[in-house]
Image 1 (cartoon, rainbow, N blue to C red):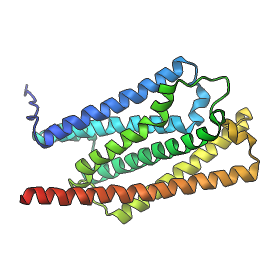
Image 2: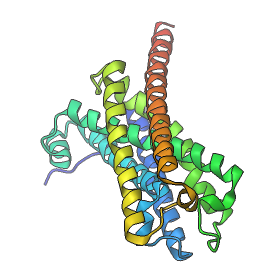
Image 3: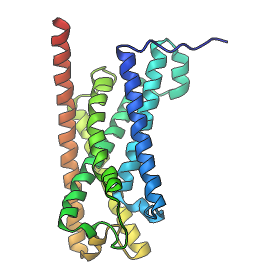
Image 4: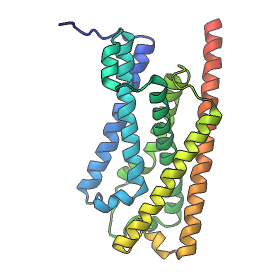
Length: 257
């Protein structure tokens, strides 16, 4: 039986290990926050209609997939291509990187939009987003609406370093922007439909303030939210590739010196 030896932890291998540790930390933190929410009675079947839950679940799934991807990079660095193929299936490297881009993009934009919109509405009326009889612990509230987008910013630099600058992702900024905006638009429409479905089933929208809106106001709010999401999608893609170009230039300068 052949013994699999792990690569030496230096250079790219060390980066892969640190990436694995970070993404596992993100996944565990997100899962723990949901368990905590369940323990205080805030996680019910109707919670699937909250965009916050969507963002937390999406971020944890993205983190787990990124961790598995980094493990495959470590195995590949030791020439264990059969193990990598067994772990990832028959998906081509570029396609897999594209899937990871879509996941990261959705996770990044969703966590940022949720954070901005939540705290903006919260500043106006703290009871507009949660039932009045529900006490949201301050730490848990920030774990759901502040920490995720901070972790997403860190994840952005890791994604640039590990995927874009390694040429695993073979698309330009225009194509990435198109894919990101189309995907986000589909998810945004799906959420609007999900929120309307909850209204039909329970007689209430997911968030209390939505129940005070008439049909026209609700439609305007949805259009604004989708437009805001698409704008953030465009901005995040531009920033992502700008950071990539900056890091490439800096790497070239460091190499020449």
